[in-house]
Image: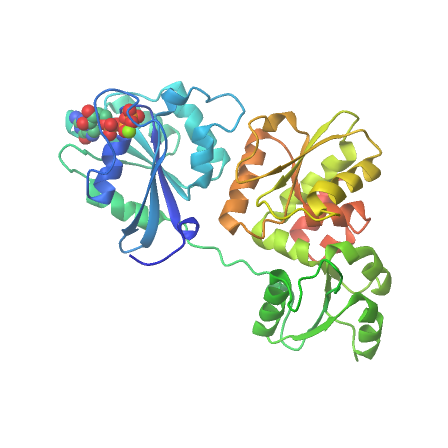
Length: 406
Ligand SMILES: Nc1nc2c(ncn2[C@@H]2O[C@H](COP(=O)(O)OP(=O)(O)OP(=O)(O)O)[C@@H](O)[C@H]2O)c(=O)[nH]1
Ligand SMILES: [Mg+2]
């Protein structure tokens, strides 16, 4: 089996009511009796994951789930097991029983899948018993594509697999900076070498920006903030873009003439890994916060807390200074949000350098699902330091979100 990190593989989730045959279908995909199948509803209680090669596509992870009628949280706005699992999925297989019509829970689930913008396919199982025509009509009227299978006598399984392979979403190749530059353009990177800088090396967003700029044949100038003005003066023509560390944005903004586009590494990363438009919506919430509002500062990894830690100390300090409000700020670490997410008025998330793009997307989707605006550290810092909208001006979509919010 090829060695692709589990988090990078496409995830396919089998969801549906209890006893419809989710586990049976997953076993058919794997080609062995991996998960327990039984006629008593509620056999699967926790998600079961299995990595496999789905040919001709390649490595995937299949996720069998508990029946949605077992979980009992649908309809309530909290991140329950089902939402967690489906927000992890790249493709959802909604398993239905050929003898029934759609229940309210199934309709709610379809709404959730659509809200999370996940590609999905309905599968009518137990089709050897005949298919309830009302179910087919319901699916047709909702414009939902479906396949019928029988796990009992292997009908339609091969076709279903082929259909899933065909419909798995392709990886989007998102640019970090390459789309903003062309051959011979000059890009200036401002890299403060302060106490927070790692010894003897550049950090990943800086390295990645350099590499991508070179890939599109542009010319990279790297300087510390102190030498920036001198660097700009030495250039024969203004650079196409200046990119700086977020925390130096105001000093740098003062040295970069208004007509030269300026942004930050965090904003480049936010666009690449997160959702810059969503984060711009999140910064609007900063201005709407009131005394007593709860704010969640969420860090994906637990790192050694430094004296002036960005998440624990600086972000809370800047939020209080900026809003002049008495905020209740919780700082949490880890891969899951706290259970009471809907109590928060705003999530300020770390840049997610230790998360894959997919994991970061999942956390944004979950926040959207609960209806809590989200922003990341870098975008929030630029905003609280007065550098928004300037630092998002190079990005058309983000600036139009900004303009629509005013
Ligand atoms: N007639 C018929 N029965 C099936 C078919 N597929 C699965 N079953 C039966 O349906 C019952 C439930 O199957 P499971 O695969 O355990 O269903 P599940 O959706 O995983 O159920 P939970 O884990 O309880 O949510 C079992 O008795 C299976 O043998 C099928 O194609 N036809
Ligand atoms: Mg099961």
